[in-house]
Image (cartoon, rainbow, N blue to C red):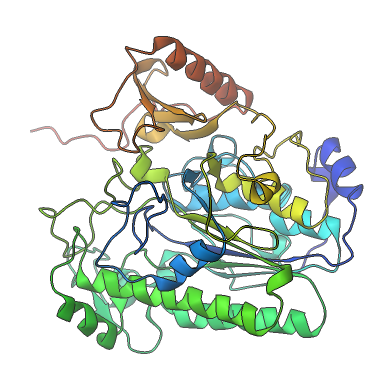
Amino acid sequence: MKTDTDWRFFPAAFIVVFHSCLAQAAPPNIILILTDDQGWSQMSASMDPGIPEAQSAYLETPNMVRLMQRGMRFTNGYSPAPLCTPTRRSILCGTSAARSGPEFKSDWVPKNHMTIPRALKATNPNYRCAHFGKWGEQMISTPEECGYDVSDGMTGNNTGGMPRSLGIESGSHSEGPPHFINNIDPKLTKSITTKAIDFMQEQHEDEKPFYVQVSYYAQHLSVVTREKTLAKYKARGIPDRGYTEAWAAMMEELDTGIGRLIDAVDKSNVTDNTWIFFTADNGGRGTVPGGNTSRPATNIPLTGAKHSLYEGGVRVPFVVSGPGVESGSVCRVPVVGYDFLPTFHDLAGGQSPNTYDEVDGFSLKPLLMDPEADLPQRKAGAVIFHRPNRLFSAARSQTHKLMVHWKRDGSINRRELFNLTNTPTEEGHNIAAKQAATADQLQQQLLQFLQSVNADKPPAKARRQRRKK
């Protein structure tokens, strides 16, 4: 059900900014491709051309590589959080997870705040917006309540295939087979892609600008693939990392869906006025069902995996293709998923100052035109990550990243500092003791921001207590 925007929910600054926007004569189309649990180095080409080992020779992702070749790679692209729902809220509302909630449950109600569809429609009411695929867990608000015209509804992990939905009564990945075969529509990748293409074609025929977010269920567990694709990877031999042949097959099918989207844009002759953004909701998993942990880690050369705030949990693929973007270009400025809302608003013709009351991101448009462009200062002076339930937070500046580990009373237990311009691998490279002044500065920025948004505190007790012997 489509709902009218109730501006009573928004601070005055939003109303002034979004109602004073200048509409473009030919507003652009925007596509956001969001994959699930896909790591930064889990493609057949490296996100950073200076780090050739950040790719897998076993995987085949030619269409993801095609986007890199025709657009810009952001080598330091981040998800707002190391797990799905807080990232999806963050992208939707342009907020850091510290502001809108770092876990599945949150008091943040997206329909009561600015969202990507609302921001676009404020620049031009002709925009039509759609969301297909995974919406998230416990998002509270429906896509339509957030301004989308068309959607798959309140979808979650089970929609795209989890053990219980695939016949495993316990719901446990460990008690079911390591993978499942679906020769019709594994992970719904085919049908999601088809719906997105149909929506884009309809808007093109109606001469309406569109925004479509295609939120794939792959590479989230369970591992589901076609028998034919699995046979191809079985014939290739042992994977070069700790994942399985079936997981690699699922990745290729995801890549095929992305290729169909790119082809649809090209065939419609709207390439010159269409932006394609590609990223993931969090870093790759450390293990997959049936995987061999004795082989190299799934996220090498990054440290950590999904759920963690080390690079393996939050550094993700981040590629943009669109009008004026130099083919094969590279940008090394740290960017994050909560930059999308102000970026899309800016590309659509709106005025996007970095002064929104709640939006924590800034527009990437200057970087898309010039990867070395000067940008406004972030609100916190850094990209902020916060996961108090796991007792850590982080702040990423242009060059350094600070990790803060909390005690349950809210005081700092310890901290780590890494210079990520030297290496993306954090393990063994903690320089907090050597560069205390830099650590102090980032710590101050982090703490001030967390306080300013009334961020969640570490829980007083552990979520799970060990049974007494």
